[in-house]
Amino acid sequence: DTAVSQTPKYLVTQMGNDKSIKCEQNLGHDTMYWYKQDSKKFLKIMFSYNNKELIINETVPNRFSPKSPDKAHLNLHINSLELGDSAVYFCASSNLGQGNNSPLHFGNGTRLTVT
Amino acid sequence: SQKIEQNSEALNIQEGKTATLTCNYTNYSPAYLQWYRQDPGRGPVFLLLIRENEKEKRKERLKVTFDTTLKQSLFHITASQPADSATYLCALEVAGRRALTFGSGTRLQVQP
Image (cartoon, rainbow over all chains, first blue to last red):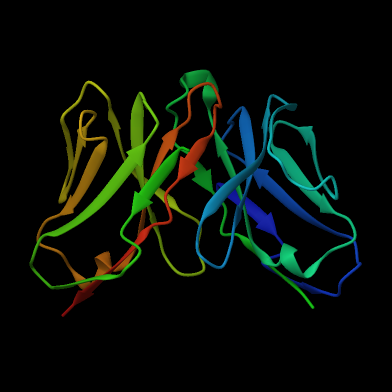
């Protein structure tokens, strides 16, 4: 009965490859996010979807493309992977319909290693 | 520029003592601030939210204060236990962005 689940947990790949990370939430939330946590542990927002509509698109390379097929799913596709993309990627969800201060529920992260 | 600062050095305390973690921010006027706990290999877990018109919020052994004049929040864990050892992150919403901005976190180590 995991609330926010993302797959895979670990992803090791070579430079230049294309990979996807998937995320699903069963909390009935209306908003989903992708955050990136670098080696210094900073969590940075990348994208946010509210009711399948992109509402936040931070300055990330256009090699990163999110897709939200429905309110419960948010996937992240990364093209032409680079060494600097190595990080832990967290999916999260919240219910902005209950107010902007709705807390985030995070998945357990996908550790991406690009070699 | 806008910044959220937490002590980057780990905080080591003895079991039973009170741990106090600091979150300072500049160039923000947040309506509320949130605190999260993160364990190794796991995602952050929400702990407490405090609004700008609240001076203090409590939940069991946890207490959060919010001083909008000093632009600071303090997070206290009383009667700390080794199980409280984790990284604690503060977060606030940048006006109009509808997403939380996080500090880098402070690692707390409670010694038995």
